[in-house]
Image (cartoon, rainbow, N blue to C red):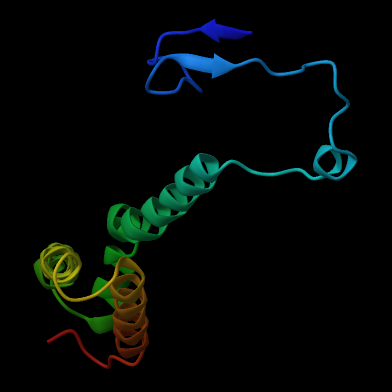
Length: 132
């Protein structure tokens, strides 16, 4: 005996006929023991971490501006220009990544290349002797 179900419901087939399932059967003991995280949750978690890594330094940079001004002995406008360049590079890099992903490289390759460029940028900034 087959039950009729609209095709729009979850698990429905295109013709709307869904085979009956025995719900009294015991679950597989192996699958009952494993705790699987849904792929959607992993994607949401990865996006959350990505936003922290991307926007955290941008939005918190104002905390460091007075210290940079004092350390490099420059005016406030010069010290604040660092974050302007950082934001401009992020938007330029996003444009470049958006052009490369669909035509040339995979998402993973662009992400690794971007992470490597950020690593080089932070390493170079840590060695800076002056802002000008």
